[in-house]
Amino acid sequence: MLREHLDSYFSASLRDCYQIVKVLPPPDEVPIEQEKTTLVIVRPGGQANQLPISADWQAWWDQQQYKNRVLFLTGSRDTFQKVLDSARQTRALQSIEDELRSENTPAEDPQCGSALF
Image (tube, rainbow, N blue to C red; front, side):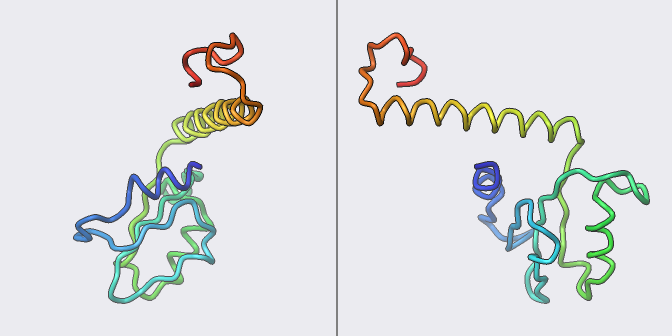
């Protein structure tokens, strides 16, 4: 769910800065093309070499031939944890709503509440 949301939010519409978006991928699933720039959204890593990306991503980048064809987007660990917590809560609420709908629970039922339907 988080991947889908970020992918739609950062989808390249004008394609001036980047043409491809990869959201939270493993390093081995990000091919770099000579003619296209890729935005890679990664989890915050340790502060190795004064960079906020993980050592795995730094090692991956060091191996790339077209280094100017990659953009990284990340954030702080605290913010990322808050995003994950919010995604879990949203997923849980959607699961409850889906279950109530599959049981044909009327919207007036106290279990539903006005926020679900």
